[in-house]
View 1: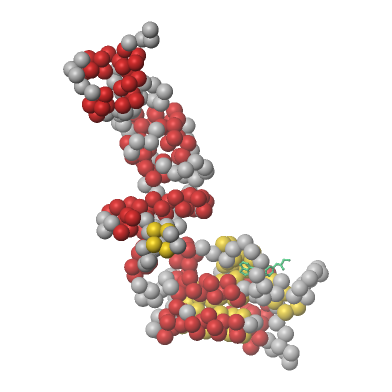
View 2 (view 1 turned 90 degrees about the vertical axis):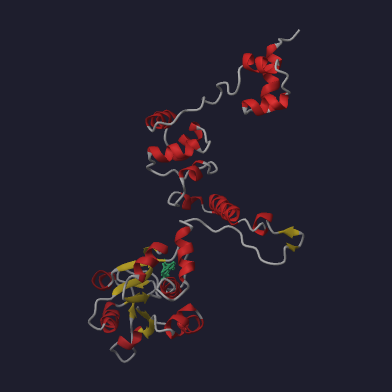
Length: 334
Ligand code: 9D3
C-alpha cells in the first residue's frame, strides 16, 4: 500500500513516522509513506496557498488550485482514494480503517486553517473524515492517526493473532489484564487466572469484557456481537437491537432469564416474547408470581416418609425455605 500525505507542516510527521509501527512497515516494504509540503505546488513568488474567506469571517481558507495540483501530482495518473481530514467529516472508526486498508493508494490531505475551498473538495476529494468530537488545530495529527490505524491492518504488519483476537471480541472493550507479582499493594490477581482452567478463564474474560463495556461504553452494546443469553443478561439500560429472531429469544429464555426481562432487554413487549417463544416450541416456565415448586399436599406426603427438610429440598429441586413454607401451610396457625 502507498500513502501520500499532503500538509503545510511536513516536519510534524517526522517523529511519529520514524519511531512507530509505520516505520517498521515501511522498512519491511509493506507500506510506502511519503509526506509532501503543499507549498511545493504554489506558483507565485511567496508560495501562497491560502486566502481570506469570501463573505468574511475569521481565519484563512486553503485555495483550490495548489491543492488540486498537489493531489494530481501524487496520484501520478493512477486512481488513488483521496481523504480530507476535516472536523466536518464523518467519524473515522475501525470499519473506516478496514475500508481504507483495502485501497492500494491513499492520499491523506491535512488542512490546517479554517478550512479548504469547497469546490476543491467536490472535485478532488473522495471522503472527509474526522477522528472525533474535539477541536484540534489541524488535520496533521488526524492524518497520523489514520495512517497508523490503516497501516497495522495491512497484511504482515502485525501478528495475525492480534487481528484475529480483535475480530473475536466482536465490538466489546477488553477486560482487565494482570501480570506478576500475584499480589501488588494488597491486591491479588483474580484466582481464576491462576487456575490453569482455560475454559473457565475464557468465560471469565468474556464476562469481564461485557461488564466493562456495559459500564463504560454502553453505546457499543447495540452493535456488539453478543449471544442471545449474553444480551438478555445485560444490566438495565438502552442497547436494544432492532431485530431478534425467535431462536435467539428461545436461547435467552432457556438460559434461565425470565420473559419480562427478555422483553425489556430486546426492546419488545412481554406478550410478544411469550407468543414468539410458544411459536418457537419453547416450554414456558410458570410466570413470576405464580407458585413454583411442590404443592403443600406433595410436601406433606413425602414428609411422611421421614425425609428431612434438606432431603425434601433436594428432592423437589427447591430451597429449604420453600419446603418450610409448605410445611407451615400444612398445619395452619393455632
Ligand atoms: C470556528 C470553527 N473552527 C474552530 C476554530 C473550525 C475548525 C477549523 C479547523 C476546527 C478545527 C480545525 C482543525 N481540525 C481539523 O482540521 C481536524 C479535526 C479536528 O479538529 N477534530 C477531529 N478530527 C479532525 S480531522 C481534521
